[in-house]
Length: 147
Image (cartoon, rainbow, N blue to C red; front, side):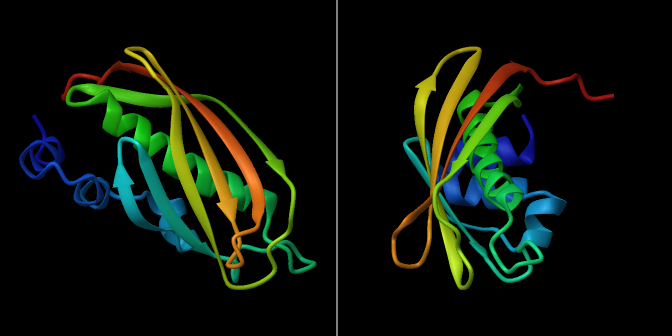
């Protein structure tokens, strides 16, 4: 069992587990912050500034990075010790453009199985308006043996 798995088992605190696991270099660079993390709901924020297209709109790929960060982390938490969740499909529908402030991604599970998870992430602007809807499917497999 890794230190991260032990922290998850001992504390039962999903946010501490997510913070202990780390967001990854891309999520760090984009300013993603986890604010709530549990099996039934995960929430993260991301600034618009620094993540825009040349015309000043939040880049569509930034929405997807926020969605994948939430959905993959949630799937890995569900997978449990000794297992690993890896993305196999992601799609996004952008319905509004954020131009300033922060956006908030809220991730909920649609399916939590033994070998597959599906999560939906709704990204809203500061006024609570839906900007993007992302769905990610992750496959769960045994983690590679430590060498």
